[in-house]
Image (cartoon, rainbow, N blue to C red):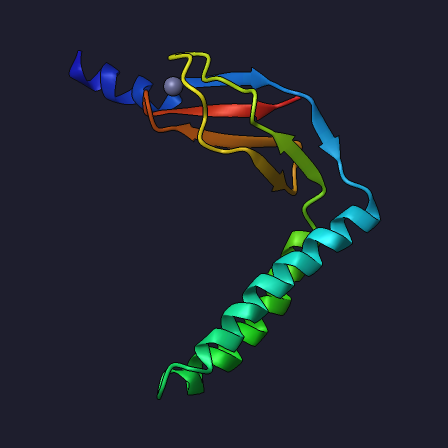
Length: 119
Ligand SMILES: [Zn+2]
């Protein structure tokens, strides 16, 4: 009996249907530039940290480009602000999420369930 409980615990996936917006090319570019700016800003701040800046600054500059490219590849926008968990009716912590695919997995911290969110 305990064996069965263990198996079903992780397979309980609830689906939530929400409208998913497909981002246009200029929107993706803008978001990608924003991500680039944030990480590059962190690189600028880390210049002030003695010793560590030798590693941090070049690493963050590379990371800013990588993060911008990754953000650009995220085509789908999920508006989670109005979405409640179907199991416990609790508001989900996330608001706006971008992803590569039109289906994402969200973790509900209230009832500890993984929710499948998408169209
Ligand atoms: Zn929940």
